[in-house]
Image (tube, rainbow, N blue to C red; front, top):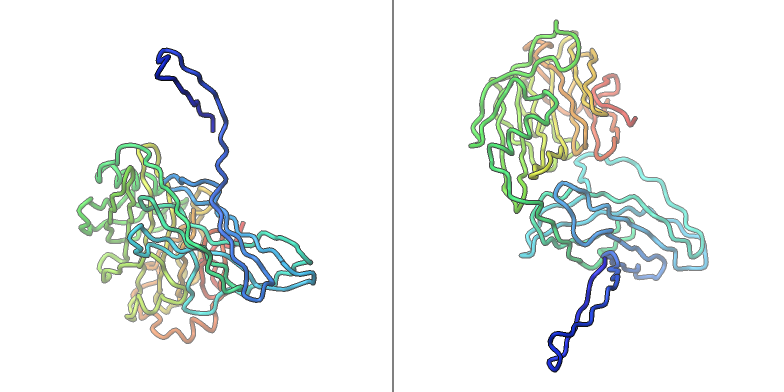
Length: 360
């Protein structure tokens, strides 16, 4: 970063000496070693100030401090707090059911290796207190401070909501929630080819959080339109479909989050849960992945969930399965369930369904 340093003398106030210099500020970084001195874990954040809607791009590395080969199961995450100490987020995934298996990482003597780390897009005003954690090594690293830029004047609530709806790739073209949070009735039209598919009746609403220079907009829907209201939590846990949808009626609920700055609308992540009627019918399902919607036919008689997935959305048209009874007990669901990780999150459905997009 170039700067200009100037100086003058009180004896010669009109004479000024100026020097141009380049100052290099190292990226924020914290480290800690395990109690036995075997490993050191380091978390490095490339920039001391992060833009709203951008990931931190944290980099976790682990170093073998010994002269012998070692094995460990390390991965990183971090806690986010405001300056009062209030916890805002934990990037680590908390699975109600079994999480995905992690293979051991082998380290040669004195080898340093980068390990996987759960990141997050910034959706809180700064400054933020960040506490990195190295799982598998039982290490909580020292807390550091990250700034959050203010990109300009904060968009109005109506403008932020409209920008989010426009950025939903047609998902809310038939349902327009209001900035006051009231639920309205509408429908989701067929999202890709095949107009013979009947629209999916829903209710939708929005929650708007105003931050310095940007807004965070969460848009929800439940279907069918007469389904009870479901407030999906900010972090949907794996295995929560039967806790959040406890009745024996076919239901679906989803949330998608947008970060709206004066210059852009950023789709942050989405969560969804659904249960269909226990029938032998098939239904249309629309998946948004890679920037476009894909349509497929899948069997009814299924329950599923997905969460935290950047750039992914799943809309099964469950009303095509009829109005019979849906799953209530998780026993059968869990016996079939196949957990699939996708970039930025996870989703789970019975193995015979294609309701969850694999990594591409």
